Amino acid sequence: MHATDAIDLNAFVTTPENVRFEYRIAGPFRRLPALILDFAVRGILFWILLILMALLGFVVRFSGGIAILLFLISWFALDWFYGLLFETFWNGQTPGKWLTKVRVISVDGRPINAYQATIRNFLRLADFAPMVSLELFSPDAPPMYVIPTFLVSLLCMTMTKRFQRLGDLAAGTMVVVTQRSWVPPHIKFDDPRVESLSGHIPANFRMTTTLAKAIALFVERRARIPNVRRQELAAYIAAPLLRQFNFRDDTSPDLLLCALYYREFIAKDAFLDSQSFASPPPNAPEHRSPTTDSKASAATISASPVAAPSIAAPPIAAPPPVLEPTPRSASDSGPPGKVSP
Image (cartoon, rainbow, N blue to C red):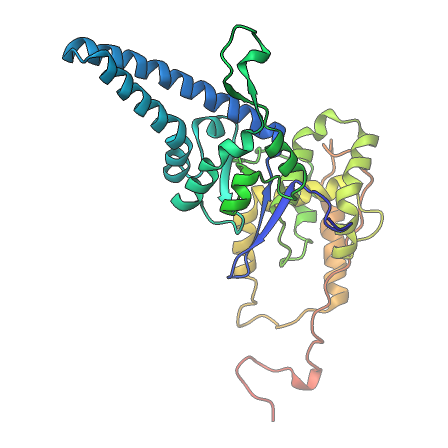
């Protein structure tokens, strides 16, 4: 393994349509509870089979040999086809994987198919090796090597970037953490500067899902964080954004994150609607002077009431406006629709 191929819990998959997906790999300790739960589920199904076999033998009066044969066939099907059927028809999940929020997918990001589920589940016995005899726990126990140690699977996981066991390598699969549904909290701001600053954020700026979650988490908890610490935490996220937006250095990072949250989760629809109708009416001049825009922006922010603000941050100055094309000269001016000679 090269130095640049360090083990990472994040896997990136690019589809043929050039769409990039990010998955979080489930490590051995994340997969162990799922394995234990699946063993428990199979144990419960095993006792259900025993009860059914007993009832079946009592009603139909099967002989002992036939009942044992049916039991062994049922146990074989349960042991070998439990994971195969569940992972094929339940989106790569078994009951244990579903409870622990993990699932199996192909290494290219596609859902697992029946062939891959068959390969990875039939090689599970090799991943359990080496087996330990029952005599290890009791001298009177029969010499049956049925207790797994999982050493092969653990060794294989530590040597692969995506924590793949033998069955995963053969089937071309990996186990990832299921993305949980996330709903941003709805928070209201009393400070009018939040809405005002959100209007100066470039219209073409789009937040990634990770950035949106980070900002939402910060805004949700900011009221419980002291002001000094709040500014320090906000600076980690807001510093590159201030440079990207060409805002002044004295702009409050806390205020900027609140403005981004307001724009993304509260007024996003209204913001997009206002951008779609941003073209001037036919009787209005086509361009405005950058100097006039700058004065108007400064007047808008300075005129906003700041009584009892909820954001304890130094007042911000108006960010520099985006320069628009040079306005037409006086010789080109004229009524709309009329061509100057």
